[in-house]
Length: 461
Ligand SMILES: *[C@@H]1O[C@H](CO)[C@@H](O)[C@H](O)[C@H]1NC(C)=O
Ligand SMILES: *[C@@H]1O[C@H](CO)[C@@H](O)[C@H](O)[C@H]1NC(C)=O
Ligand SMILES: *[C@@H]1O[C@H](CO)[C@@H](O)[C@H](O)[C@H]1NC(C)=O
Ligand SMILES: *[C@@H]1O[C@H](CO)[C@@H](O)[C@H](O)[C@H]1NC(C)=O
Image (tube, rainbow, N blue to C red; front, side, top):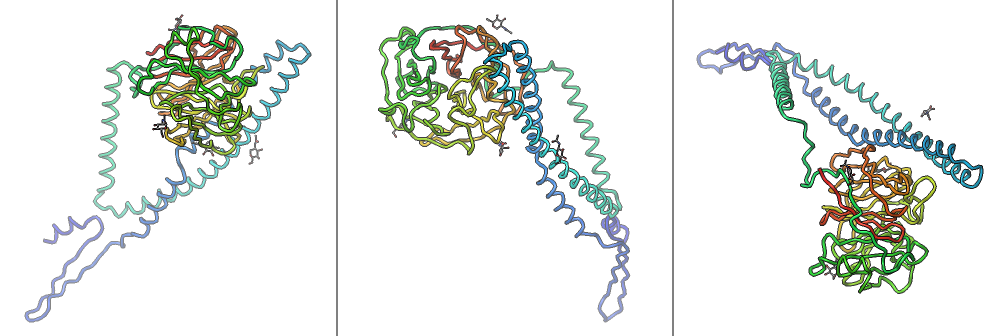
C-alpha cells in the first residue's frame, strides 16, 4: 500500500501514513509532506511573463526592419546609378542641373530612411535587451520549478520530444535528397511568369497620335454578352484627365478604330469623380481609377453610370506627388496604378509614411468599393515605370532604353518575398509605356505606349 502510493505521488510529495486506530474511537491518519510546497504562484507569474513576451515581439516588427534595410540598400544603389549618369552626361547646362536636383532629393530621402531605420533598430534593441533579461529570469524560474519533478517526468518528456524532432528532421532530409528541388506550389495553375513575348498587336487608336496617355484592355470578368468587348480610355485633357470610356465590340474593331460606343462619366472634364491618370482598369463591368483631385479610388458602374469611391489611407500621394518615372522623366498623374489578376482588383500607390515606396492594397468590389489587405514594400515608386499583378504577385518594370523595358522586381503577397533580380524584357515599339496591365482571362499584357495600343503574351514556367 505504502509503496504504490509513493510511486504515484513521488513527483511532489512523500506521504507517511501512520494509522492510529483504537477500538471505539475515530481513526486518525497523520499526513506529512516532507517536500517544500510546490510554487504555484511562481509558475503562474512565469506563464504570464511568457505571454507578455510573445505579445511584445511580433514577426511583423522584424519584417519592418528587413523592408527598411532592403529599401536603404536599393536607394543607395539608385543614387550611385544617378550619380554615374550625371558624370557621364553632364553638359553643364539644364540637364545637369535637373539631374543634380534629383540626386539632392534622393539623398535627402535616403537620409530620412536611414533615420527611420536607426530609430526602429534602437527601439528593437531596447525591446530585445529587456526581453533577454526577462527570458533569463524565466529560465531560472523554470529550472527551479523543475527541481520539483523528482521522477524526471518533464526531462524525460523533453528528451522524447528531442528524439522525435531529430527523427523528423532526418526523415525530411532523406525525402529532400530523393526529390529534385521544385518551385513552391501556387494557387495559380499556370506557374511562374518567366517571359513576355510580342508585341502581339500594335496599333494607333481612332484618336491617332493626339493622346499619348491612356489605357486599354479587356474586362477579365465581363458582363454577359460583353465577352469580346474591349475598352479604351484616352486622357483627352492635358494628358491627365478623361471623362468617358470608349468600348469596341471586338479586337479587330478597336485595332482599326471603328464603331466605338462612348459612356460619359460626367459632362465636364475634369470635374469631381472623373478620371485622372492613365492607370485605369475595367473589372466586372466597372471602371476603377484615381478620382480627380483626390487620393481616392473611384468605381464607375458602366451600366448605371454611377460613381462610388473610397479614400486611400491618409498622406497617400496624388496629383504628381509619387508618380512613376525614371531618372529624367516622370509619368504625370501616375500616383495610383490599378491592376487586375486572378483574384480581382488591386491598387498600387505610395505615401510619405512609406518614404515614397510602393504600397499595395486589395480593392474589394462593391458599391462603394473598399480596401482589403495592404502591404508596404521597399520599392521606390519614382524609379519604377509601371506595375502589374499576376496571381497575387506584384511585378514592376523599369526603363532600360528606348527599345526595352525590363520587369526587374516582384513582391509575392503570399510569402512577403521581394526580389530585385528579375530580368524579363519587354520589347517596346515606342519610348514610353504609360499604362500596363495583365488580364488573367487571356493571360495577355495590355500596354498604352505614346498613343499606341500594344499587347503582349505572357510565358509561364
Ligand atoms: C542613431 O540614433 C542614436 C540615438 O538614437 C544616435 O546617437 C546616432 O547618432 C544615430 N545614428 C545615425 C547614423 O543617425
Ligand atoms: C523570352 O522571349 C524572347 C522573345 O520571344 C526570347 O528571345 C527569349 O529567349 C526568351 N527568354 C527566355 C528566358 O525564355
Ligand atoms: C451596377 O449597378 C446595378 C444597379 O445597382 C447593379 O445591379 C450592378 O450589379 C452594378 N454593376 C456593377 C459592375 O457594379
Ligand atoms: C506600413 O508602414 C506604415 C508607416 O510605417 C505603417 O503605419 C503601416 O502600419 C504599415 N502597414 C503595414 C501593412 O505593414
